[in-house]
Image (cartoon, rainbow, N blue to C red):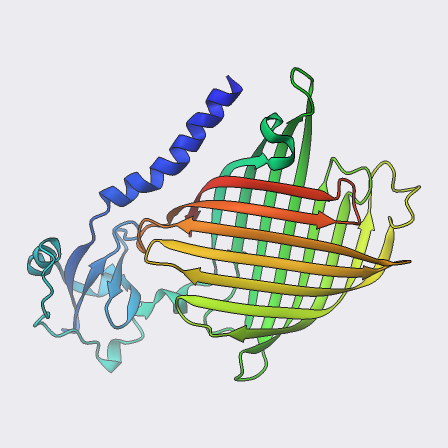
Length: 341
């Protein structure tokens, strides 16, 4: 029964976004404002309401247009048919916004104060093979305003795991929680920024090092940052605090603060319109009686059915090594269904 339940969820995880993609039909529209201006673009039906229309404009990007300033709204049948027939033609109508109305039509980046994503999925711990099943919940939020000089983000990753060490034996249930917070500010025109971050990990199954907190401050350097590809490298000093667990009182490297250093790499590449690859790695070196190391690697391949749909499916592989805790090594992959908001 347990395996059957998870098979159903996996099938749903893969098929749901594909069904959404198959049913998505972008419609070309013409919107006439009360001041006489006209806007031509693609209606984002998933976001539009009775109070406002969301429009993907070819020059201005995504726009939010309040219903109170709309004089006329109609579908552009000609352009919709051209798209269906795969015929590329130039729209002869003029799209313009007069200066006295520019404040009423704003891009979503200007009016949105935060954005984020939420996902749920299944994990498979490679070390336990068929004897481990996990339910994973991820939530990430970007608190940055487009006009802000700071970037602020926070993410939560909660996992509930059931592990069976031998066939027919009892299940061991454990919980883990990871909270990552980062604030950064640009300091020059050379893609440089100063950052401050906190990385907290909790593992209820750890005999020592159950709680781990790494607070770091340093510099971030960006490389070939574009709409499709970005690479950033961060490095700086840190303080590493480790505590908790049944054996923490007898382990010398537990319940202490240590000077540490952090090296992070974040890479993102939009492979095409629907697939995106992300690689994130954090290496830490803490200084106790000897150097104690840790490394967290995650690789994510995300499928998004369309730009106008917030739904996505992604496959993630994680490889974590932490000398400061027991167990020290975690190796797993997961399949998730998510929604961007």
